[in-house]
Length: 316
Image (cartoon, helix red, strand yellow):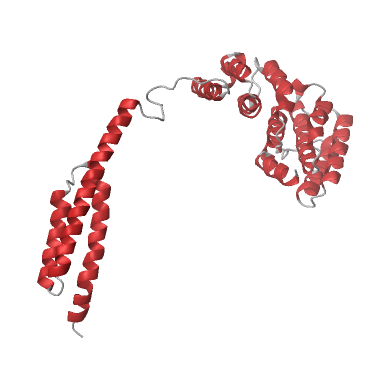
């Protein structure tokens, strides 16, 4: 789990980034210091248990400070950042089963969990092969926030559809998600159509269903098409055999009578060209591969016959 979780969480590490460059009050300075320490313990020292403990200390300190003297957004960013580091530490410790319960403990109810934390949990449980863990929480979260303009709502809906509903085979729920209130808010018309196409594709693949393929998408030819293909291939094969027989007979005659005269070798080359360009119709599409192979054969024969002559007659 350690390697797989680190791979999966590396892609979503940016989800936990917060902007804390502006001045902060003294009450949250200690929390920010604990956040920096936890990140260092996680990424530099690779001391995952200590990093998790530091995050819990930071959350306790943040809870004692509360939102007094702090803006709600800054308080939420600090808490989310500590939770992201803690989730990564638990995953590295192979304690990913604790993640969702621990997150709900921190936020009280699933609908209060920030979108970035929900995305991280969906990806984590999909990576470890436990998408069902996020089914109920994801459904409740999307239903609760469907009427509001929550940032990254569309991303959560997309991840929930792709990494939870479809792997679990919940196709009816997936269709309802796309065409229902959540889909209207989360997706554009083009995205909804694409999602419906994916759902329908999954429905066609379900066992026990054998949808009749359309003529344009059928991977197997019809009987009439098979007959035409067989006839065409048979004619091409017969034509190739006839040409090869002519080539063989011509070479047999030439080998006996045209062995030691360069001029007669030229006549042999002309005879081969006649076979290639006249006897075999180059305009026929089925002739293209045979032309290529016979031309390659001709080049090899040309080199065999004439290369010794050129090397012998070359000036020294």
